[in-house]
Image (cartoon, rainbow, N blue to C red; front, side, top):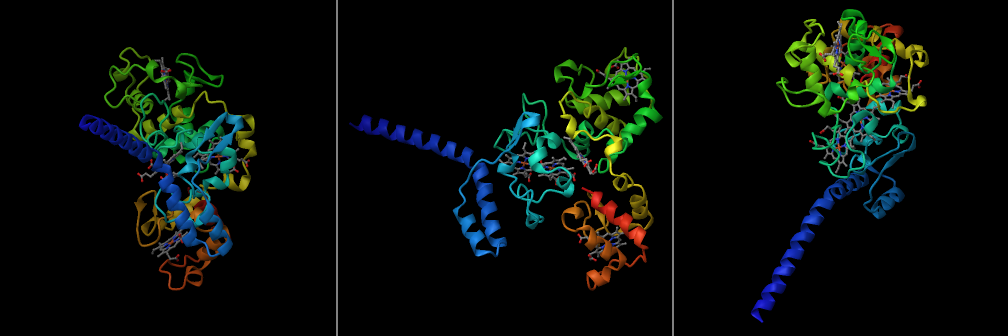
Length: 357
Ligand code: HEC
Ligand code: HEC
Ligand code: HEC
Ligand code: HEC
Ligand code: HEC
């Protein structure tokens, strides 16, 4: 009898443990949805909407992208990406930077830019960090710009300065095209680079690579010193700086075999002229007026004024223009100086600031 009670007890314990483990695992995204709904209730004034939120049940959310043959479930946790009221919340419940205005989520999803595993519904499974057997963890920092290059074929891509600089280096500074072909253009002393960003990891020789075994690292070390990675390489060592080698790596990673439907490609001629100029005049005004003394961009700069990295998600063109013309009229008591900008200058700065993502 005692044995039986013991056995039943153990079984019960085992069952409870298994159930608890499953619950814990399954609950990750539900926790974010719960938090999202309670924040949403706090931020909403409309009683009807509040009642609707009250009734909302946890569910997997997804964006289906037929033309890319993929499903992105990132929004199961990143629920507030399109809600400007969440600009100051911590991830995963923060408003997305302004770039989605040009790339609406229902048409682009998330993984075309970020990579990662779209179908996953856990933090680990989505590949925020390196994930075993998954070749494409999410891009970090400036490597994200390699995604822009899949679609944006124009020489200078607004919002992707590293990629744009690399395209100039490739052709003009280092004349890489003398030996390499991309999409049929260039010489043939070196391998065709059209799809080099998708070359499988196991096809790289890591014998002499000092850093981790990733594509970016292989490219970087190979650019710094081709013969250090492949002792008999005939590729010349052009003495790249770390910054140049990094930019070149971003460019290589953008050369993928991923199929991009033609309606998603942007060539020079489709770029609106007023945006093509962004980053030239606006940027030089930004430097000339020394805005970084008070503002930071991507972690660099002063702290007297707000960080401007994602200002496009907080302010619209009208507001910015008026504020540039006369900061104190828009924000009484502002400590931002009046630079006595002409309308044209204020326009240029507005466009530049809106192009920051
Ligand atoms: C299970 C919930 C969940 C899913 C699903 C999810 N994320 Fe996240 N994500 C998070 C959390 C939590 C953070 C914040 C982590 C931190 O603060 O360190 C985050 C952070 C991020 C960041 C900021 C950088 C970083 O790594 O911290 C990016 C970019 C991101 N997620 C993109 C995505 C994309 C793209 C997908 C879909 C492939 C996705 N996420 C799916 C929960 C999720
Ligand atoms: C057109 C490309 C593009 C698409 C599509 C896109 N993102 Fe982003 N995302 C970016 C860029 C660019 C940034 C800004 C990175 C930076 O400032 O360093 C960003 C930033 C983020 C961040 C904040 C990370 C940080 O460093 O602050 C998260 C989280 C995120 N994206 C999640 C998503 C999710 C979820 C989706 C799908 C709904 C998505 N993104 C779709 C390009 C994209
Ligand atoms: C899947 C393809 C795709 C990816 C990836 C992509 N874009 Fe775009 N982008 C587009 C398309 C299509 C347009 C709309 C072009 C138009 O309206 O003529 C666009 C528009 C833009 C615009 C507005 C200027 C314009 O051409 O109207 C900017 C700025 C921009 N993209 C920057 C970026 C940056 C930065 C990245 C990488 C973080 C990126 N894009 C990634 C396809 C893409
Ligand atoms: C004189 C001709 C020559 C020039 C110029 C040259 N390369 Fe190479 N490249 C080669 C040869 C040969 C190889 C094959 C041996 C090797 O991988 O080192 C190669 C290999 C590569 C690879 C590895 C390709 C693969 O499939 O493994 C990349 C990436 C690359 N080159 C990029 C560049 C870039 C970027 C530049 C400009 C900075 C450049 N190359 C300039 C000849 C050249
Ligand atoms: C002496 C310091 C100082 C300088 C120099 C300065 N700013 Fe500011 N800026 C501020 C302060 C303080 C604020 C916050 C109060 C306000 O909104 O006026 C601000 C606000 C802003 C905002 C609104 C940000 C937001 O999120 O609301 C923008 C945009 C901006 N500045 C851009 C610029 C640009 C572009 C320049 C260079 C032409 C510049 N600032 C030069 C101090 C400065």
